[in-house]
Image (cartoon, rainbow, N blue to C red; front, side, top):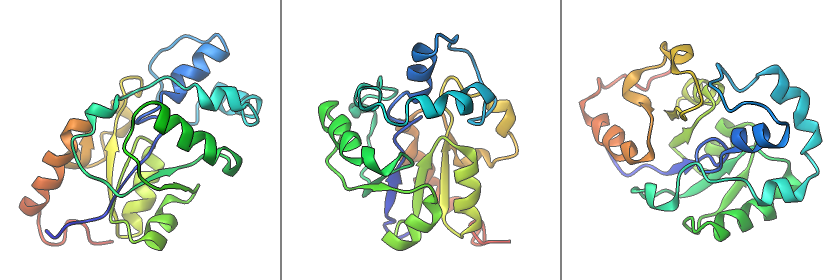
Length: 181
């Protein structure tokens, strides 16, 4: 398989947005079934304009966990926090790569010629796959993986060090594995 352009999500992959929300709203850091947990949705407006919150998210994966090259970060944050996101990545020692802010990550991937997205939000993986692109589902420690058993296990990871193994395994997949049904 020829060299593919890769993008990496930030919240839920590099930054622990969920832990920050639990701390901020005094909620227990327990397993959740999906990103759309009602309390997260209800509390989100309270942090949308809080630069301090976005500038100080805790790390989920340290920079040395990234043992693969990639081309972009694609992050779904309010556009006014793009500079904060860039500052957070730099402050925490992550690779210097362009940051794309997009809520429709599949469209952003097509626009920027990205082939592979590593993301924790399963809905993004589904949209990327339906667009004929490759989504590698990163399952963070707080996300209940049993809710995502229908996703192909060859494209699911629990640690960023597994990305190269997944990509190397593409050559063993059937020719039409990534075809849109």
